[in-house]
Image (cartoon, rainbow, N blue to C red; front, side, top):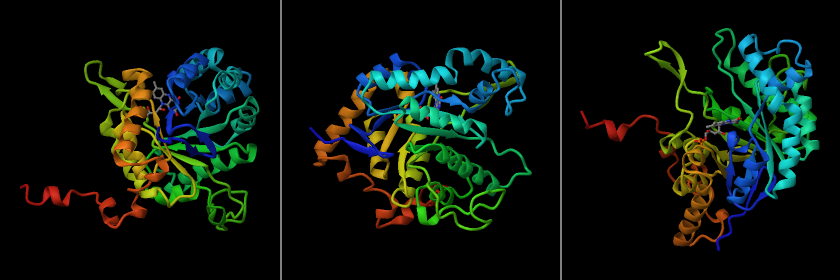
Length: 351
Ligand SMILES: Cc1cc2nc3c(=O)[nH]c(=O)nc-3n(C[C@H](O)[C@H](O)[C@H](O)COP(=O)(O)O)c2cc1C
């Protein structure tokens, strides 16, 4: 038997396979099934910041961040079955039902009113909190710096509320992802420098009290925008990934592993044992899986773990620590291999 135990965001996991936040983890029954199938940890379906704010408003006023009546109507209806109160119940029931760590998840875009709710999640028994942050930077008046500071402020605001381990699930669309990732990490002596409307240390001073994220979850797979040419209106693309989509997170996990002061979790495109092994070699502490479970059922968890163990036995590894990060850039003799964006070898000579 190989040793698959893993430390992730300060939690002890029996293996590095985490069921990611999705519809499969929105009920106690779903959580129980995922645990029975062998998951090392489970991230609950996200509650939206707007739902928390709506409850704060006692569902009487329009949500601050949604000027869209249709969205508000939806949230009101949704709130009845899956609102903030029900979510706290889900956290405590899930904790009581399974022995693997339970990570609550909030989908958020601001550092405003909702953050007090984080303390309630901790009190309900959550082992950790994952913040799913992603907003479309489509306002030409807002610079990249301001957008990045928003991520840092959300993290900082939540940190002020809880001592729980916190993970940040983000997308890949930043102009300097490595810089942001380093700031989001837990590097106390090199906290971020805020420039806009920050009430911590003075403007342009380093925040030396900074406590960053315990983990970064790379990368969220955002709602796919598509256009239905027959109905001539916007539509959603396929909600499920394929293994082909592994490469973006694989590249960044391999570039960031060992360079940021926090754990890395890989999400998007992990469908089988080989995908998982790639991410662990690149330096991920854990992988998160979702689409493959929708496509193949929860039995896929055992299959992926069996494939991992088999590969470890073939290659003589006793524990995942023996090979984690072996193929990260920081440990490579040819770091340039990790930085190529253009297909020089493939393209030159083909014409
Ligand atoms: C039906 C469905 C619901 C999801 N709901 C959430 C959610 O509530 N919060 C979240 O952070 N991610 C959510 N996701 C994203 C997944 O957690 C995951 O990051 C994404 O699907 C990429 O991983 P995969 O390639 O393994 O599917 C959802 C995905 C699917 C398919």
